[in-house]
Image (cartoon, rainbow over all chains, first blue to last red):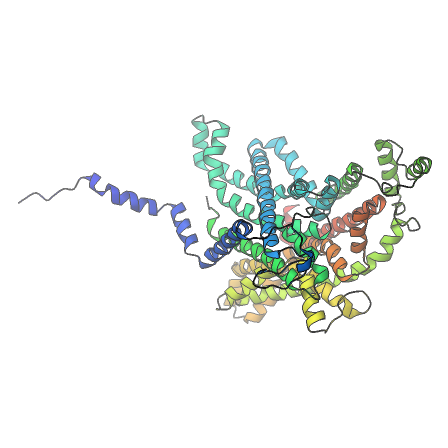
Length: 299
Length: 307
């Protein structure tokens, strides 16, 4: 009887590793996300609008602020695809600049919100006791203020301009993020692996960095994607109140607000920027909706 | 329960005080004053004017004077329209805003609940993705974009409703719709989510086992438990509707408080900005307070948690 060929365990290793990697929750989630058509559509639309915002002003022969009164209020045509405004400025370039500005405001507000929300939320959960109590009460009180009115008051006081818009939006926007992070961190802190980490003498900062935040990353991403459309929306709202960016700068909000008085004869002036803005908000909402369904970790 | 009420009352008070202080500080931080543009004013007249409006006092004194007058219900007179007190302006124009606001709250609540039920009923059908995307699309159109779009189609293109201004019921339809669309979609999503949660609970399985009709299960057993959080959300809805009305009133040329508010911001009319902001905050904070209490009253499970 010949001895059967014995394969060493190492021979299985490459295969095993690959299979193992496929079995991690992270891999499965990513796979699920990338096979979701709605998620892909939203991502595609967002990327196209971003590309448009970056490329259009570079390629186009027109400037966003040069006025040409001979060409005022032209309907969309071959040389001006989106038409022109009452000062003869090319709307395609202006809408592209508006996209840059609106998205920048959205991203900056969301990052401020991320920094404040994550640090205060995890601080509150990890310190517990009095710090937690005081921070939570502070959030309760701040959150019971009428949001829009506070945004208006702050941007009236700070004057018009990008910084004032971003600050006024971020002033209250961090609270939902902080609350969600706090709740998340508190659940994660109950887990056994954290007790082991503590018992091993890992420092609190290390625990936060290595164990808690990676596990809370799902809700952080979802909340951040929800903040961006809110910020874009608030900026446009401020523009309609006359508190937006100063001309000749243009955001989607200011372009749409300028167009409202021309709606009767030049409706395209509103339709294009408004459609762009709504499409962006829609894709971001869809994205966060899909992420929420597929990404939130169940620790 | 009593403890909860007291706690909420304290919050109510602190938020109102905070809003008063915040408005005051912010307005003080503003560059310029309402007299900067009248270059022809003699210095003596300017001093007199500043004295009249207490602008020559220290900020602390001004704050105390303001606090005292606010608590006695006196918001002062408008600086741009000196013949009118802030109180008058609010009392004159707020009823107009309130009509549109109440209509919008009604439309968004009923429409949202019906739409939410529709979403849930079509959960498994092939229309489900279309419905979900439609609701998501409505959420993505802010009221200040919806307003001119509705104006364009209903008033200019098809000419079935008045374009703007104020008067008959037909004037209120478009502003109401543009304000109601967004909260309606939010409520629809809320109802959809809550309803699917409720429909999974044991007592619904029991009702099915008893052989009750689908209709009865939905409307008699599931819906009441779904609506409690919706009522809790109505406070937020009214806040969104009221603040949305600032711009919508302006677009439709409606002489409501929102139009005055925007004008006061542009004119830097301090007393009017402070008075209106304070008034709006009071209304909003009270509405949210009431809807929270209603939520608590409607859902016995929540009440038990506070006992």
